[in-house]
Image (tube, rainbow, N blue to C red):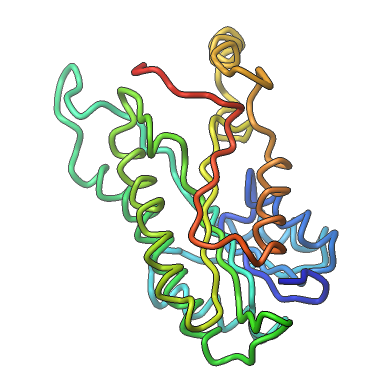
Length: 254
């Protein structure tokens, strides 16, 4: 899928991975709609990249339908969807004083997994009616955000790992189902990323974490995620794949 003049949607677009991806897509000519619960931040970045900022709860059906309609009204039917919206959901199943609250687990899964599914299904429904483009007759492309926690979830990551494991498991069957429509589905599974989520991490903790990463021995940069997302958009042969972005890190139990 070509980027130039192509409408694109980035969820969680106001910060972190989403913001870096939105900037890169815009630099290469895409017309970007940033969906985020933080409308002010989304609109501020949208102004910077000549895009549009839209308030959206990715796990809400009515909210997503309204956001997709607003994006289409501004830029035309989107053909690219990057799902970056997510929450950390840290905590032990059996804490010192109590078990993990069920609604906390449900909220993590709701945002990270149900939100990804909700965006994907409604985007695919809309794009399935569009005319295919290019020599491969492609209609659209979806890039989901998983995590290496899906494979090596650490102690305290049960909710997060479960939600991201669901994203990994969702990607291939969705790609197979949407193949007849010319819609590709891939995912990126980053290791620890240098985003606002980890900005408050003490320096010694950050250094200790970086020392466990074989090469490069540092956190993943949001711009590196964005570069991989761009490649997954442009390389039509990649479909149904989850790509690790982690410097060969395999996380220890804790």
